[in-house]
Image (cartoon, rainbow, N blue to C red):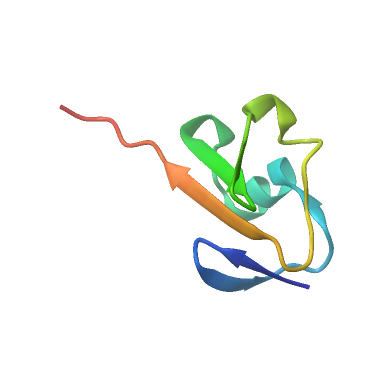
Length: 66
């Protein structure tokens, strides 16, 4: 199945929870914000929010510094 991940087409074998998608991408869920179809997903909802065919996902990394 295809989704749009940060504006690019990305293939997934099956629908995945946001947390599983982050694991697949090697991303620490504590350091990002995730939006699915223009809705910001709270970290506590990562396991219950399923990414499906045609969804648009935006993952934003937090960058520290000063």
